[in-house]
Length: 205
Image (cartoon, rainbow, N blue to C red; front, top):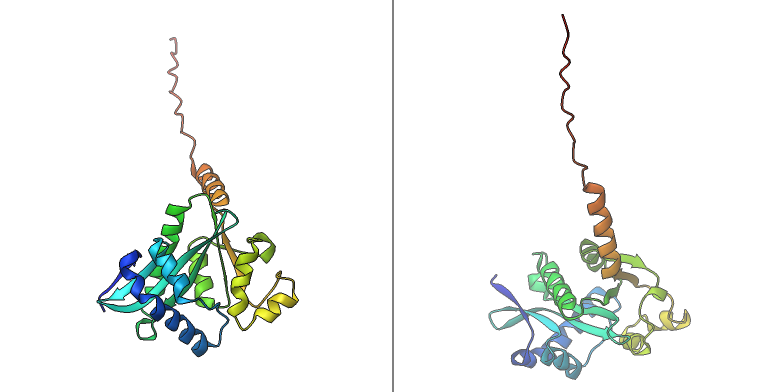
């Protein structure tokens, strides 16, 4: 296995249809809810440099992309997929970390969120510092929730007024992360030890 993970650019746009097919086939096989995407949409993400693609030579083996919502205040890492023949080798985590780092670079002040029914995805997010949250803490951008219409669980989300579904919401808040790190650092600071000089007492004979 000689897989390389690239930040997407226009030279990879020819993989757009194959990415969509892989996402759909994976959802069908696992029976999990996943929003469908059109090749034109994936091609747009690739052209904008808002995706990462994993290739073994010229063969597509993995993919993930970035979406922005609420005037770039929220970012979602979406469409994470690994070809069945390349699973169980840690590739998903490498792709996840790459797209997460790209998100932090492009939108350093944005909150990064994810909704998923997959335990593996939730574990990866947790390892990167995501915390479970209610849907009310995620973007209220209607366009984001419209993207769930291709999911076979959409009726559940709709019945609950977009406040609850089978997916779990996870959020990475860079501001809270910085506060936590600063607090942790402060606790580790050790006060300098001041040595008192011994006083020599003179005894008169």
